Image (cartoon, rainbow, N blue to C red; front, side):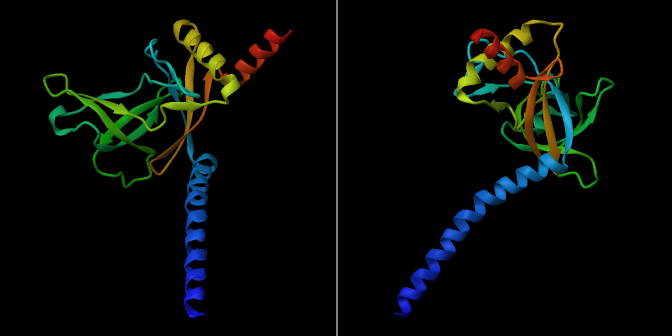
Length: 194
């Protein structure tokens, strides 16, 4: 009888842990969305051969590299901290990068080194953790086309709205000239039905 109580207790504890982990992940992301600082990251044109995989738009950013004192000190895939500021237009700009977590109250992102050149240019290219914008399957192809067209049209400003808090980043939306890509795709689908 005693072993049944132990098994039941262990089962309940395992079940609670399995519920706790995803709930904590969701809670943390919601906290970033609610209380984090929003930054607008200008997107860059992407490789036309592979712009869309699965049900998400693959994003690339204009502001993804910075000159460092010695490019040979950085290793591909290494975790880094990117401190941010904004430019005169309100878009995110890299203020600094560090291997040490910032201790002041500046906004930063926990990112990874994509590439570091150490022969003269000392440029560090950054892999942001928000390079995929997930979409509903029925809207994904339309979003892909809309995004590609906006990247070719130099008169359009395409950017990602990202909420940042304590190194965590959550991609809120992709906007073209201030309008959500979801709204643009929805309007295009309505036009095609009529």
